[in-house]
Length: 339
Image (cartoon, rainbow, N blue to C red; front, side, top):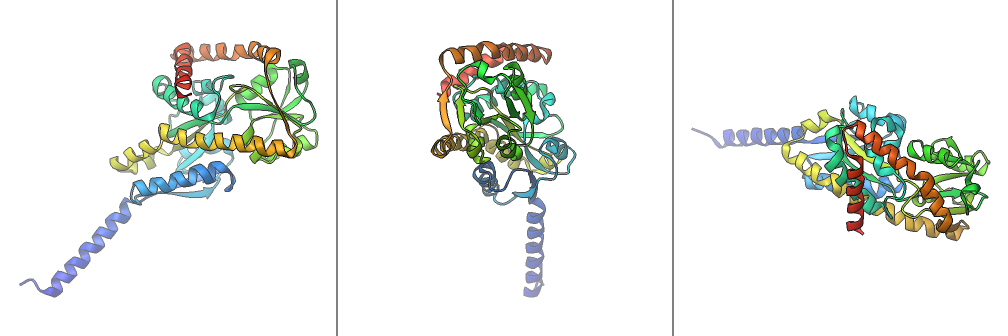
């Protein structure tokens, strides 16, 4: 005869088994975040996105943020090798790995982060995905900042001649190439050191989206901001995770992560970038940075000098088996439709 005592014991065992099963299904993703914890990409994008992921998976997948486990440039390898489960990085930090996606950083492509970011994701899916540039990791999403501009400490730029010989801080990649093409002197340093470099005269200025110039508190060192319509270039970025961690997720949770990645996260990040560009210009203008817009002869000269980069990228894309002209045409179509 099955007694009440036996029934309660069995129920207790069942509850323990259910709890153990639920615990076993929970996946904690360790996100190595090298950005400052107060930076808008952390506070306004990554944190709320992680909260939404936990909510959508009913707690089965949680993101745990840890301080950067290495330099920003090392994070692709840190995630690939399993030192971290997830990370964010900038394509230009490892530009040689990403010859195709670097096409979304070309000059004069889009007026804002939203159109550039969504177009970048769609172009990746349509033209670049098969090339597997992210081999070794699982790509979650990619996006771009807003348009990059030219900021200087003492020199107001009204012609290409005004740029020649100026020392300008760049992160590498196409920003370095553009500086050299314009006969400027690229200076390499982390963004966190830019203020000291410019204020001490080690650099005369910086290529940066307005958001970054503001959030890295460079305003007091910058007398002038030259806004480049549709961007001097764009900085593209990506979120990625270790494939073994990805494989541990259930099919249901993988589907949720795909839905919350891709174009969804690209648009979410872009909203922050665009808002911060507007805020940054307002605050820097109030602080004494004089903004002007490149136009007329200056803009024509810039376009003529920098056209070479599009052709170079088309040739590099052809070496990867991709029709670069078609990819850029598609990108521009997406930007136009989004605007």
